[in-house]
Image 1 (cartoon, rainbow, N blue to C red):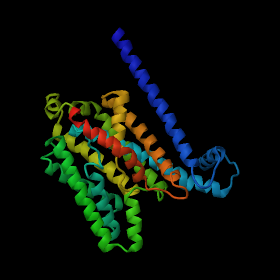
Image 2: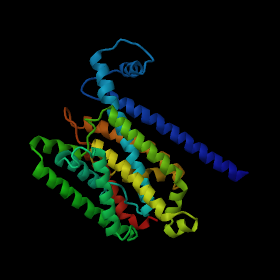
Image 3: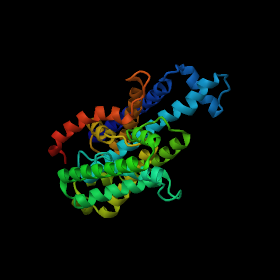
Image 4: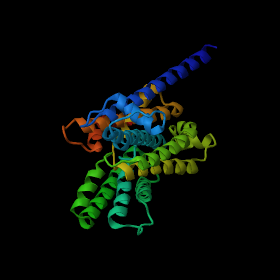
Length: 346
């Protein structure tokens, strides 16, 4: 009876923490919508949203309403979805690879997706039949395949996998730079280089719809395999002994993470360290069970990315920093700490 009560108490505490994080997420989104060169009151923001939904018909300044609905709200929601997706990818990859440093950026998946997207935009790869997202996904898959082969099928250990990821990042970043240098005009080169560092400036509602659907599907799929991910943290043999089809499950979850990472890169560019920082912070708060880790990563990643986007707009007056610069300033020190303690993982 005492054990059941303790279990219920832990579940209730986790539910309260998740509810609190959801409230913080909404507050961060509201703050993001208010942040900018043009000050907009909370009431104007509220009525702009409810007017568009058809719930109210309050007369508003057309410029303010357009800024809220056509620029700032879509930007904030895209940041939340991208942060959630990247954090989810990091948590899944760290479990599948049993590697504390695994995440799309470190493993070269983001670099591969960038190469694929740039090849479609600048080289016209596919002659219009291949979309930006398809090109990014193909690049992400190629990068992961390269890492898997170089690290002996992801069984080469922590050091070997990370070294393979570094090699993949360097290779695909070099390919991207080569394409931009040799095939892009001056304006394209400037736009691409800014986009590669991450930017929510060009995000519009169709992008929000795409990334939200992809991240939602990825989250449901990964959450359905939460117990499988728990087993993978003890190794492939432990997972196989429980009757888990290791190869098929690994391919399915890797494909899900690659799809999420590629979609995010195709919309906002390459953003690093979110998938590294957030899962470790979440595990510290909620423990190692993925039934708790994955939902917590989604909301924590959303909060982290929205706050990083706000910081990118206010750190330097009258200038917007690439979002990748902000996440790197937070992520690199954390990466160094995890790298120092990597031998304690698993």
